[in-house]
Length: 203
Image (cartoon, rainbow, N blue to C red; front, side, top):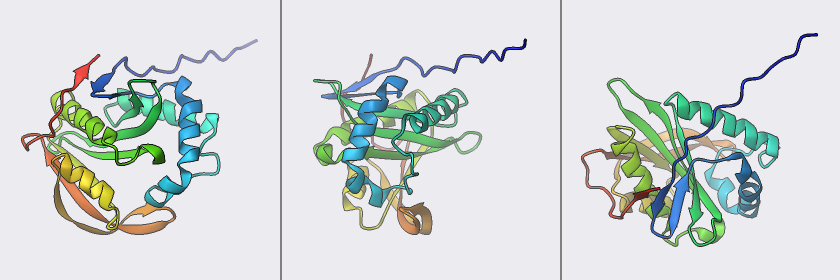
């Protein structure tokens, strides 16, 4: 009798970046329950700014599929995913993605992020983005980080400007958000631009 022997799934790297009262690290399978609870409790807050959620968006199977893809993307130098946690209680409060990595003559990637409704606008994300910015330029050797936000998302635009990004343009119907093609404001930060302040500790 033949048996199918599956190779173990590749693991995320053992990495933690401490930034003030928060830290970021790659996601793990054990994060599913807390992640799903946070996303579910923040559904109304997040959905206007994100692509349409699939029907099984908070299921364990969906989380595991995402995690397998994120792990492979990390190994292939295509994208780098992080969850954001509070130091005091290890509670997950958001996520950050460095995606669509382009090497060669570009050395560029796209930056995306989300935070739970209860943790919005309290400084956690700005500290975490500072850590990811330093990691992207110093460890991933990127030249440029790009980001975009909806025209009426003043909180996101303010966060990017606070972190040193410059607004570079406007893209019509740029991304499909919450079921509709939406215009976006475009921002970018270069490796030799002034970076956001803050001490980042790699643990």
